[in-house]
Amino acid sequence: MARLDGFTQDKGVVFMTDLNTNRPGYKKTWVGWIPEEWDVKRFRDVSQVNPRKPPNISDDMIVGFVPMANVSEEGQLIDYESIPYREVNSGYTYFENGDILVAKITPSFENGKGCIIDELPNGIGFGSTEFHVLRCKNVNSQFVFYHTNSYLFRVKGGLNMTGTAGQKRLPTDYLKNYRIPVPSIEEQLKITSILSTWDHALQQTRALIDAKRQLKRGLMQQLLTGRMMFSSFGQPVREKGELPEGWEKEKLGNFFSERKENDPNLHLLSITSEEGVIPHDQMGRRDTSSDNKANYKVIKLGWCRKSGHELRDKRAILSRIGVQNDQ
Image (cartoon, rainbow, N blue to C red; front, side, top):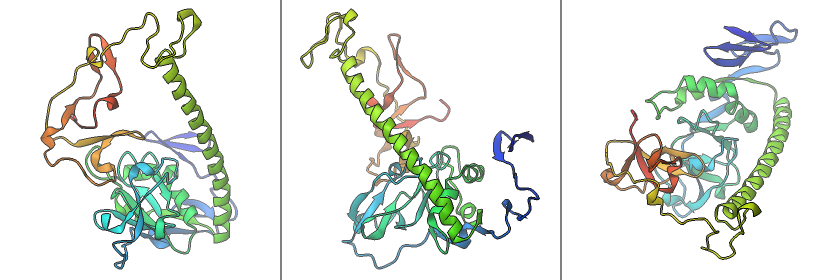
């Protein structure tokens, strides 16, 4: 085990070492040395894990629906759909305002997907079955959420996942038995206030990056269509569909060929704008795929090649695909 200025490296994973060892006013616990007035609690002690939905929800009640794609890796609920309860009354994960969502499937868990639910219609929501839910009691929800979003929680969780490659999930028992140090409510609020301030600063930075990304997209549209050009290469075009002098129009078929192999035994994949290619059952939405999976096309890892050209991004040509594990 190697030591690095306050950090310990074990099996390729770096953990922060306990700098409070034998420090006056601290005690040794399951989670390391913590202030004497703090306690150590398991998640099951401070929250309900995956609480059941109440039996008296009206079929006509409007609720929020949260697919996996609507939860960011930065701990934010991006959006939700408002739909009648009858459309999600079975086969989905139930939660309420104030609950904590933790993605349980790889790679969403390792990537940090999770959030605190807020402002749902009628305070009730449903979402992907690939969410764990924590409903806090006698502890600040934001404080617990920061623990679920911590590096240590995610690394240890990754080591405890079960299932086959590409379909590993975080066991409920890991969540229930995970231990955290718990200070007084007043100290929890102070800690979360500081961390929330940093969250706000990060959100502002991401907003600036998104604005720059939009500007780049506009610039790409101008440069790639010849509507904006360097003077040394000619004059820009003015009319839609017009080509600059020296440019040629080609069909996509001249650069790559379409694969047509079929194999109904492969895992079904889907394309998302946020996460790229993911297993279809991670979409967190109602399954609208055909029962006859033989109609879906196989794609092998690598690039599409023809005539010496390479296509790196297949999102332009496929909507659902199967992938062979050995390719």
